[in-house]
Image 1 (cartoon, rainbow, N blue to C red):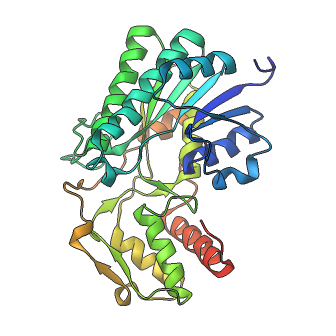
Image 2 (image 1 turned 180 degrees about the horizontal axis):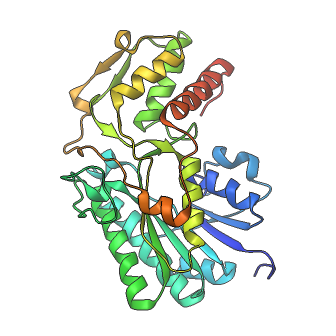
Image 3 (image 1 turned 90 degrees about the vertical axis):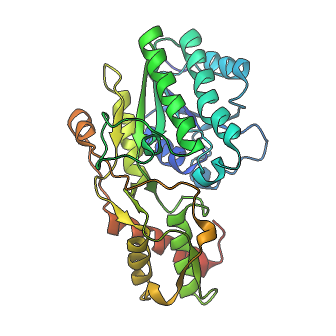
Length: 328
């Protein structure tokens, strides 16, 4: 049980990109921050290494409903941020059940735990624009039909509807943040933006000559992860829970990202980037771009880092990593 004057936040997936930025934000606002990691005993904590003395880490298998309920009862959180997920869209075709269990199943266990053990807590779930799949219109808003085009999208759509059900049926203060692609120097290298920024750094430092990617014409709405975690915190401060689309409202292609990233290092992407059809997804989304006007209105929120700033931030960070011989 926490000090009554200090708000406690429970953050699942705290060691991930989003969790690290959210933890920084919450600590700056005076919260007690408790984060969960996978129950393996070997949590990858490099993203929160600078925060380890200030946060409480718990190993928790979110597939274990009884264990989740026990943690919520013991922590007694005021706010719950559900960020843990199987986040690889490409891998979801190979492991669809893993995506469903990790994304929808964990959401049910966490909501059940909050409902019974901390019914006054507020909860926000990190959803995804992938729930829209191949939308017929752009940009997309909270009114866009949910038609997922991947097992990952299906799992996130299931979690979205489950949250709406618990809100309507049980009065749970829970909302879904429909997040568009958000990146940073803390993004995993399996994701295309970080693959590009690290590829640029290795080529610029003479460690490689070519970067191989899939669909260069795919378009996404990319923003800075730290900005999007600020939106999640603001959602928790609303008196009535509200599902909101969170994005920059501007779409760029993978080719655009490559061109800007290589230019940061003084290189021409056309001399180094190759496309491999083997890296294409079975079904790829059409243009995903956010209409975040409702979030801007209700949260008084907007991105602080634009596309160019994001690309530069990532490339400069990876250039420093490669030059210093650091890992991730």
